[in-house]
Length: 96
Image (cartoon, rainbow, N blue to C red; front, side, top):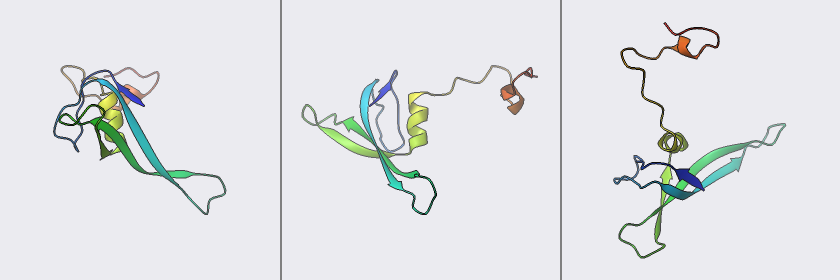
């Protein structure tokens, strides 16, 4: 389950989705031939309510996992008057 604190949009869906909690399914496959157990994500699916369906009707939508993360927690807007730089991320170093 993934909770969105504000309305969000996804490239695979035309409409903006309301804030709320949504079921998300992650499909993974075992990566064979490694000395440790490792899995690779092969698909991410979010279940969205159908606006014109009956109560409890949902549609399964395949999404990019990165897009889903960005939709849930969008980056803060850049500082006014300048672009963010890589040096902004270096601990102990002041932004220009």
